[in-house]
Image (cartoon, rainbow, N blue to C red; front, side, top):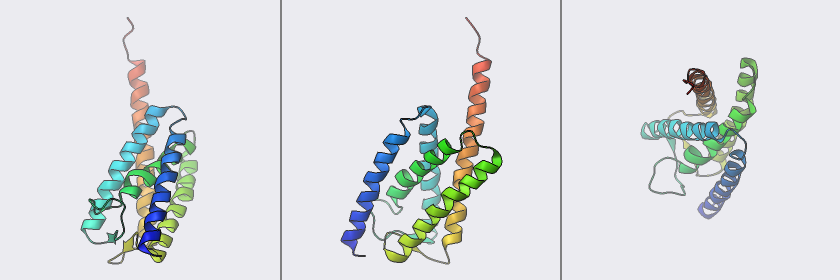
Length: 165
């Protein structure tokens, strides 16, 4: 794929992700989805910076040249997917969460693998592969999901301990 086509592909992903984000934030509770989005963005950018600095992943073609990481993936696509994952697993059992995590992580890692093989949007280096991507994606989905469980429990506890006036 030519660099021009890769940039067009990136822009299409950007527009699709913005549209998906708007749709996802229409479902209550918006506060929870915003926390998920921001937490996932932070974790994704932190991990992405580490693997890029260590030389495991490279992003030769980027929409935003200022950054070494894929801003599109770390700050938009990955967080939007995580919001959707959290919405789908909101009332799920532990087994349901783990199963759905696999159902979200596998396609995400497979898409990244195909993009790595057929474009210059991402390049694996130093032995990085599909399995490492799958594990890191699944780990971050679960980390954010269980962080939200803790946040929601704390919020519920604080509501029940509020003094009445």
